[in-house]
Amino acid sequence: MNQGLDKLSAVLPANQRTVTLTEIDFPFAQPRMHDEWEVSTILKKAAAISDKKRQDYAGTDPDENFIRAAEIAANICKGLADTDPRRATAILIGVKLARLQNLGLNGAANHESVDDTLDDTINYVAILKRQTLRARAGVLTGAK
Image (tube, rainbow, N blue to C red; front, side, top):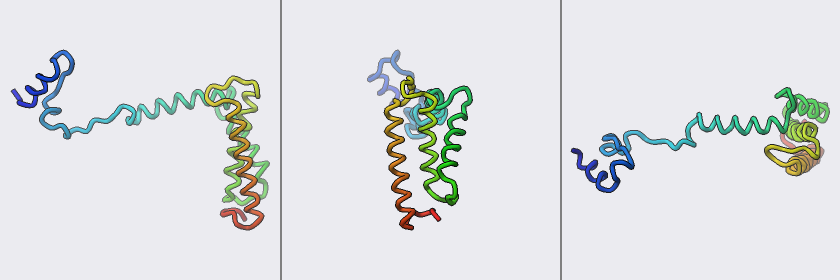
């Protein structure tokens, strides 16, 4: 019998763990990954989060919040260059406003609270204000 297996058997009773010779003889031959590193595990967790958030952000149409966000951003960004970063900020504002429109101020949220959404919206509006001031001064990259 393998000497490594004899040593392990002395430390661990046989009914607690089954050990293959590969693990004893070649402990680094096959790297073992943690389950949380597996792509399938990552995708399952992401899907669960997506399902919860979709309930907060959209009604029956899963793209409803994106449509609303795009409409809001299009109205805010009329005449801006395609590369203007205020477009991205406006989309983020639109996403938060679409969520509020879907939930309402008294809505029961599944993922983040309505207060968190209001705080996020305030922050995005402040970022948009800063970007607009920088654009007026001619120092906002991407703005024309």
